[in-house]
Length: 410
Image (cartoon, rainbow, N blue to C red; front, top):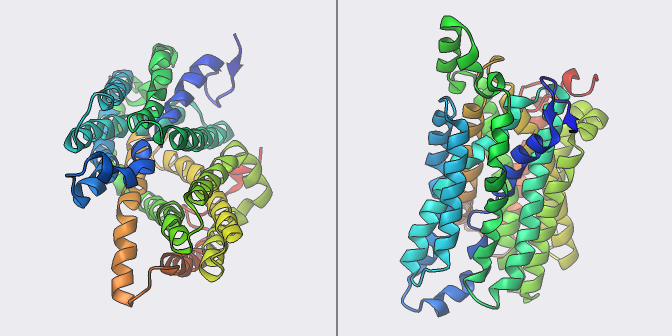
């Protein structure tokens, strides 16, 4: 059977595939509801605007506390059990959607879906950190990011096709969780000393490793801050382009195209991340920041169809370089032998908080600065992304931005 070099103990290809299959689920919560938000008032005429907004936001809201819970559970002897329970809960919630006949039924089901996703998400990267190191880990983090975002591209397309036929059908995309669920028995083949490093350590050393808190490290806060920033800056492409397109009466199809281009370009760097880091070295995060700035600035200054697509692609590329790089950085924060899943869980909170808070931040700044409804969000974030470029230049030697020799001296 073919094995994969990990920088530690070689793993069978099928075991690595089972770990990567968890990535199929991580970006999906909330997706199936988005294309039919405009139809909800027709489907449920008695529903309020608050209920409609809650339905689209609740999975990501629930994910946040369950990420923390998952990080805590990752220090126990039941990692594989938590993964299985999370996938079962996610799949059961998906099936329940097909039987729901009310808005509050959908909201309650979405709470359980978000809980399942929150429990699972840290393990999609944490298990890679447990089993890989060095360039192998960097490559796998890139693949994980690429797979999760490619799944989102395909799912967005499928949901768009199904939403016009029956409002229940878009929830079919969540059944992709059956793939990693079927492969979970293979996770038991991960060497126990890698799956539970603190448990296998001897005497007090193991107990000490288990008590280490990632939040004691300033590096953790740096990675969290950068991850929050890049998610907030680029999420407006998918959240605010539809309003800009509607204002110019360019048609709903363009909204889907812009979102698909963004997620397509997010996933591309994930498959070639080590190559990118070797070529651009210390300039990697500066270039990624500049791509986000140019993309947002272009849309703000020239809100034309082609610029929306081009800007979405540039923002996607910048985010696509940052995301797996920050995952990799998060796994290196704690000392060797510690459970890095806890760190990843804490860092991932930044991503989902940014998704939830982006509309509130933009609307708050709009009210404060008396901005308009057109390109204000893009102009605001273009200015903020210019700050990110400056920070990435000034602090290029800091942990969250630094591409040191370990990434390219192979």
